[in-house]
Length: 428
Image (cartoon, rainbow, N blue to C red):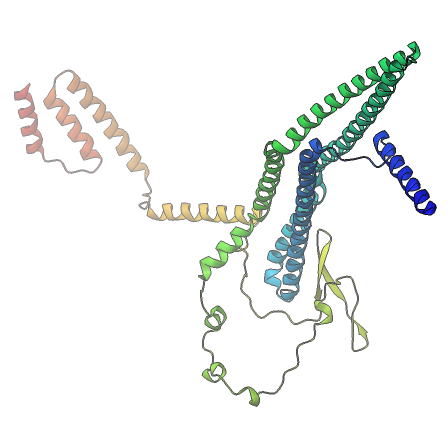
């Protein structure tokens, strides 16, 4: 029985000690329920921003890799066209455009994208993280206030007991007033921290759409700028498309078969798969690889490469490959003449036009000395006729004009002249 009594006494002491420790705040800090709503909002916001940044980085990576894939595709098209001299200009321009696109995409989405778009999310997430830390500090101050209030209540109870017993001293009163002043100070600090926390959570969480507008608009600005620059770069490709389509319209179904023309029906007829020998898959040619700087050998002899360089990229063209028999101009426009050729063509056209005008003129008549004398005499008669006409001597004027015409070889009927002159006189 003594053993049980001692055990119960020891247990009661431990419970009392634990109670005192809890009251004095020595145990782990408790979460304040008044901050739980803000805590959950900040936690959800942090998760949303982390997920969205992950999506932005994935978009950034895919945009950069897409431009690189387009450049690699352009280089492989160069490998296909390597034996066609007439198409080298087109493929060089095509590779050059995609090289510029890849460079522009890398600069815009790999470097500037972080500074322009992702920086908004980073700053937002940083402020959210700092607010969450401030919330923890506020919770710590609330626990400190609880501790100060518990100490104040305990000392106040002790002071009341001492007063009842007549043992309350002035020193005890002073300590209680200091404790009360400290509690009031901590209450003011906690109230201010709670107010700042509420205001910050409202700005970060409740006004999140206004903040996200800036990020969204920056993303759209980046895309608009990218596609405008990309459209300007690929604008020259439209010329090649128009040149090709002016010669060959788009074929919707079976374009290869229709371009080849007459295909033997025996080839197009379906056959038995078992009758066809297994054809091994073609191995990739060494010269068709993307390692354009390597050297290949054939028959113990080193093969020489003529690499077409385009902004640092190159594709190999073997000097001993057979040239394409297709003599068409490909996708390029007809070759434009040089300035000297254009000048020569213009001069030839002018000479041709002058020659045609000369051919259209009537043949020239060679004048003799007699013709010149007759012309001078006719001029004299004409002047005399003009003078007579001014003096109203119409008959004389007609006679002089008739003489002038006769000298020049024109036959003038004297009777008609006289009748016309008489009629003229009668009118006057």
